[in-house]
Length: 165
Image (cartoon, rainbow, N blue to C red; front, side, top):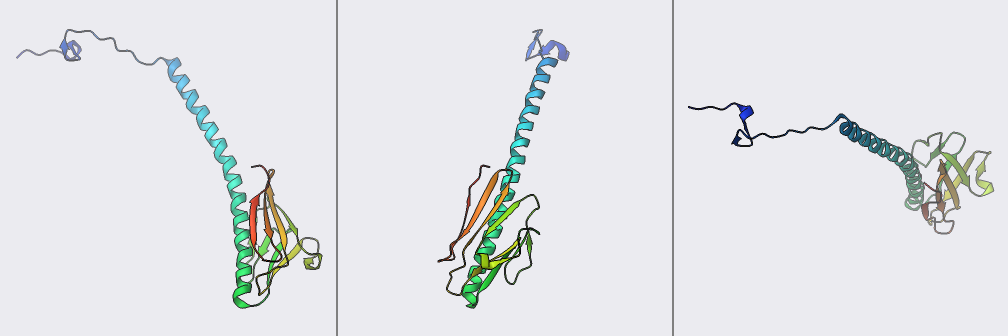
């Protein structure tokens, strides 16, 4: 039985020569450089997105806290207090433990002067009929700002992005 060596049998034809060409070192290095640049660009995009989404999440949690205080006032038919302390970066709604905001997030509270407790602590009241004392909380980081507005007549809480992200 005749046999042929693998070097003589390439591509199904005996004796045919085939030039096998690989990649040069330059081509391989170029591809690796492109992959590295792409990875760096993706990492930069994710790190920026992570900071902005964290600020958005903090704003959403505080919005939910304000809405919870309003709902509790309607349910219990008793005035409820949303307390924000900008010095300690903490806020609290009735019946819940204080929630903390990261220290690198800037907090400002605008509320009625009568509801200020010192220089860093303020209160937004929610009344049994759904109304509130009104107020505004701004959360900011790296030029981005989320604004939480509490309408005094309806007690409606609305948040919106007002700074560049």
